[in-house]
Image 1 (spheres, rainbow, N blue to C red):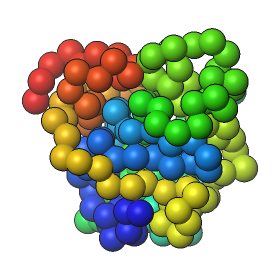
Image 2: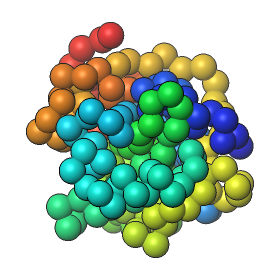
Image 3: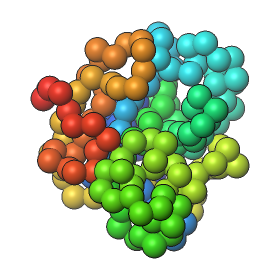
Length: 188
């Protein structure tokens, strides 16, 4: 289980470091193949930029806490809070399923490959993530945590699915993974 200390790095370091790790969510798990960093201060794409409730969440919670929100009233998004010299969040964008495939497929229908868990909304639906998980601790139970993986070849690219600060190379993908939501545009 990745300790809380890992999440006391910057959101960019954590986002890069989580690629290749296993996300355990109850009876399901998958290798993180795509993540995206958001800085709590000065990042116009981060929830803390315009939402006082997000800033209050950061103040109240420790690093390694799940930040879950409903995007456009349709899709739950799973993030983890980081509190290093820079504070922020890591959005878990995609996983390659490892355990609980039947449950994942039941939640997602007969989707396959990247259509099963590629993209933050698909990933949350596949794992059964909802607003009740907002504030869950990723550092206190082996049933909901991250587990260190083997060193991974990680590609950095601009963030996607947002309208502001897209140019920051803060989206990280596992090289050559067919499970990423969108193939990287550039290699950094």
